[in-house]
Image (cartoon, rainbow, N blue to C red):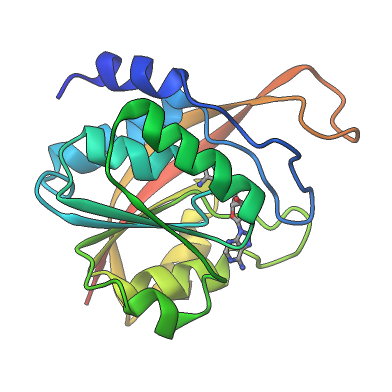
Length: 203
Ligand code: SAH
């Protein structure tokens, strides 16, 4: 799978119709989504695997996982408007994925479509609601033995202690998140935030 090809396919996808600040709805830019998926693919965690995308939003990671050769992919989000766009995006890319409207803490509902080999997520960073990423980490580790997440730079130490005894962080990939002005309180048109993609493996 070629990184650039994946990036180009994902660039065509639609984003959030009405992004909610409370839900920290930022679409992962294609370049970063492709980076995560390509790294996971190169580690053997995507091709032929069942993928769970937590807080899938408009489905860029869910759809991208299928383009990278996943056997199936489920995207979970609370927001029905985002999921409607995700369905459109999947149709546009001609990938067969499933979307589930649920809170990521609803373990029963999510387990119903399992089991999953790999979880991927770009969780809320907790800018609006402190520790908003924690239930995402908990859910991901509850459902999949291998987890990829995008985190604020400098979060890895916290992450290491948070998952201690449950998982090990095996890879950290440094990347940049080009953030377009999404909400009124954003001052710049585009701001680059350094982020880290972490791979965790359940103990
Ligand atoms: N993964 C997407 C969206 C990232 S934004 C992408 O990469 O583009 C974070 C997403 O998490 C939003 O779509 C938001 O609706 C969703 N979300 C936030 N809290 C949630 C919760 N408790 N349960 C399910 N989804 C949630």
